[in-house]
Image (tube, rainbow, N blue to C red; front, side, top):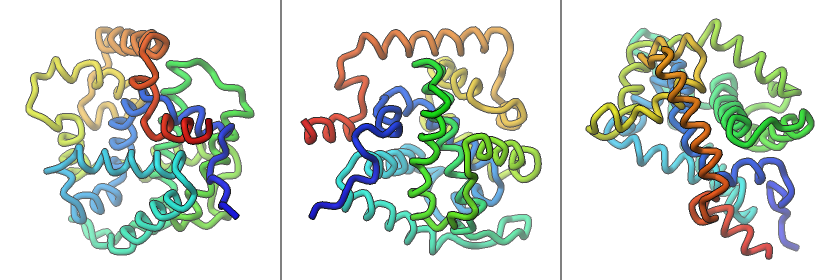
Length: 261
């Protein structure tokens, strides 16, 4: 008998994660992640992120979409690959703090950045979700969290508790250090292009980050930047309605939907 999909066809995760525009939230999610000094140290010491920021981002996005949309066997293999990779990521920061990638609190922080950034950007562009759907989106993400080594008992029971965890982390642990800022420059400027080319994504990223991290990473948020943020959101709304499916829906979702047709 064929294994059931990790995410059923009518799941909230598939409805949300199929949207191509969500990929534009990747910069904000990555900045949130590496704002934690221990996450930043793991990335800096165990990857070529500064030299290949696009490659890492592509691998991260491809793995996430594989888990949500692909066959159950492929999805579980993708999760096992991540877990095996995390086993080798451990060390000491430049300030002498030890870290391990499989530490549940760090794993939960990374998971929270992905879930909450996706929800916020989706609701900005598409519109508010019903409370039950917001809760389901988090509930559907929990099997991924446990597969990556977070004990089920450590997971926030509700989305409100996940948001409370985010606030706690931002107040206490998520304080960018020099390594965080160095990585952030590679994330924000992966190619040597004029600043105006990056202005729209900078504005969108700034609007998705809390004020403390905007300041820490040098993202401006004056009147002009807020107006540009609103213009980017409106443009994404219009593009979502006008673009053909091949440009508005991620390839993984198009493949899965054709397979189920």
